[in-house]
Image (cartoon, rainbow, N blue to C red; front, side, top):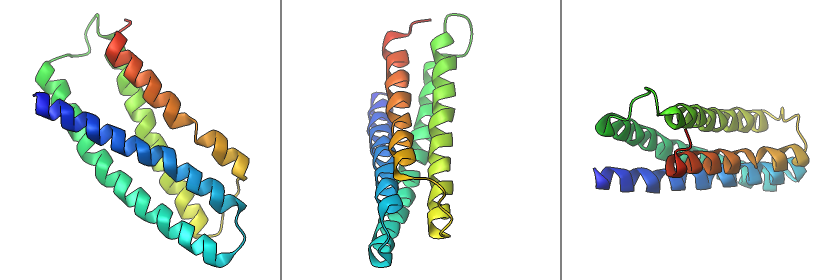
Length: 140
């Protein structure tokens, strides 16, 4: 079970590295008007999104394995797990929204400024910090 936990942590860290970086590419895309540079940034964003998805799937599956293996459950005294599962759903929703925004860039339909993407980029930091605190501290 320790190897499963180790791999889960490595995959989560790698997935979140992509969640941190992809919106930074969006910042650059929102500021760029040169079609050649936009094409390069779009290619980078597509490859990163594909790689992030490849990391997210086994990370979530291993998380489910750990959840079932440790028998933590959602009963009384495990309120931290309820909150963590909400944050996992938030991370998955953020990942999905990155894909939606990427498709909008590809279609030339971006409606947001680079300032929006700078703020958008802060969400995964908050999600990861809160989820880590819940797992380590188990406040409720």
